[in-house]
Image (tube, rainbow, N blue to C red; front, side, top):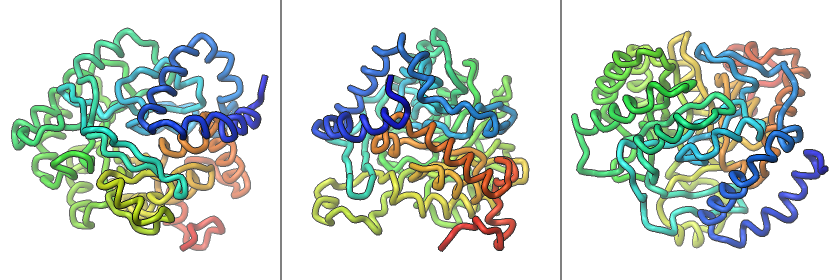
Length: 375
């Protein structure tokens, strides 16, 4: 059977070119179908996808993780793959965004590749099966790894004010009794008519209600956007700290189009949507570093944005993240990516004589450290 390197070459030289001949959303659904249909094989396949070292095990927000590399929200919106993702080498996964009501999302086409930039643009619009259906599904699933659920407001501009708070709280009520590792509140989706939530008073009310009803004491995170102003970030971090949230997922996609290699004409033809992948890394990492300086000492950060190598993951960890997530990198690098990131991350830590816990925020604590971020 092919080893991890052989599987990586097979993906890049055969599978990816074929998938890239098809509409990105259709390719995504096809990959889901193949993964589900291959379920009996995953315990054997997992021998080639899993990182076997124990040096990257970590405890974050009171939860034990086999490794710090997770699957970001958006890839498995409806929780269809939670029983096999543990065999793909991830340490955890975040499903969703889950909304109170089922929604079809924005009109197609709504997902676009930018291969020259190793990036994606999406304007899916929070499509999903809705909280009731997803909660019922997860009750019957065997979770193969720690699972977080990303909660967002139903994509309906008529749901505002108190109704918006109730909408998101309703989703929390429906999923809080599942065997979850954590909950993330998505306050920063750029693909709805409301966009980034700027009313911190509304978020404070929501966080307080969730904490009061949080009888399993699930860690609650808030997902922030690199497009937010510094003042908004400061306000959100202050609110999250006062409400005793566990931490932050940093960050969401961006509406900016700076520093792209892709032709401006192609980008203009694609239109609006959230940009993810390598061009997002700089913005997300800067936000990670800022929030690390602002947050309460007991809060933690999950870094997300442009991570496709162990070096990328290490940069986020040195910049304050305790764990990382990826999605777009998986599209370009294939399913062996989590294992490769873990192996590279382990090598970088060993070369610097650091444990994973010691490395968190190191570049901000010691500017003279030889692995401090460049630029």
